[in-house]
Image 1 (cartoon, helix red, strand yellow):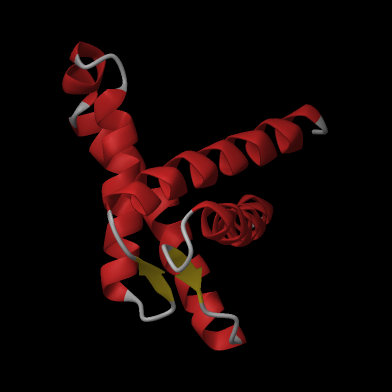
Image 2 (image 1 turned 120 degrees about the vertical axis):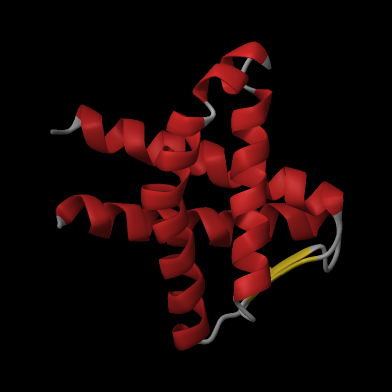
Length: 121
């Protein structure tokens, strides 16, 4: 239960950081709604995608991820973020460059928070 709450908080922070950073480089390239219900739906979808769908895809595609030296893993993260964009109205990504930047920022934020929470256990 605590792991899911940490994942929800991590994804919330990652989305808000990504919005702030990407919109300084590319105006209106990445936006997240600031209504509580819409934001909660986006965070929940991203958490489900990262916690349940992504591990299954990585397990199935592990040989290809190894052959591409991890680039396919990065692409899977991007595809899942794009799917969250498609399935929710609270997240808007306009273009490939904002999607790639969002993938980098969200991945780095989640990795950092995951590392920090494991360090304090």
